[in-house]
Length: 395
Image 1 (cartoon, helix red, strand yellow):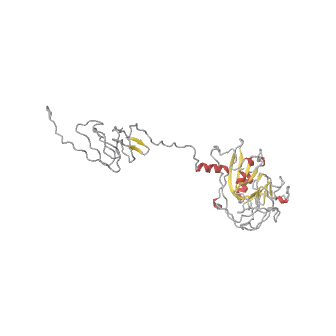
Image 2: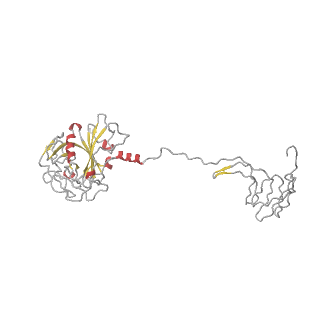
Image 3: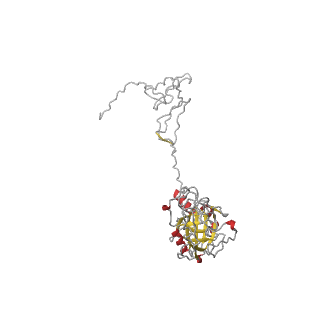
């Protein structure tokens, strides 16, 4: 073939096979309007261009086919982006099943990608944070299981001239811990409040109302935080105020309060412990003085017998006591029977040795902790007890 030109013989023109139902195909030549009774006379061949080999025949009529009566125009073939994805460009106009289809106009590709959602920050509160906040609002642990009902006695002088302790409630409190599992460590505080020395700005669980009732000169606070308004389990903790006015916690001990819970209006025989802030000035007991800083009255009349609400023995409950200055004359033995507000308001409310069940109105702690408390409370620190159920104290 080099150096010469050889004419190539082509086969005679033959019409294209009938295409599948759909859009007319792209071609360079003449598009002949098909003859259809609904669309008039076809246009002359060659109207849309010249083709030396002839013209394509018209498509045969079809019952669902609509005539294409617009001039052919090339269609932009770049991919089209939609929300469903990228669709390849079409090579020609796309037929539709709707009547009078029109050619697709060229257009620039438009992007419809979904924008990524912005992440939210800083709105979630973790369960760990919620727990720390709850701990700051009022910590306490559950003490011994409640015992069954037994012999009860009223406030006021007992058979030997002293107030008899109270007994446990009839029903066990849900979630109570066995005696072996009682917590004696320092109460938890929030890290945001605690300093390196463990001190906090305010006693956890004591709200503004009760904090305001603590005398300014007081540097020792016994906190008796009850499990509930009608519960008889109490956590007792000694708090010490630092020279800076911050608070340091000692151990927390599990004990009891009155059989039926707490009240702001205590009356004799109601089997509820009074809620409030009371000074602590006097101590005593049947046992010898363990080294108490408070005035200590050793007296054999600190005796109680019988059994508590759960049938537990009461003997030894008054081996050590600290008088709570509710309806009594401070500066006297806890055995002093005087009631300034009247006998109907009850009296003989003490901190005494725990006998394993609820009391008639007193607060109880384990015997070895009672001895430790007596050696710690200092008249120069003007000690007080803040006592009540946790919800009431948090106000």
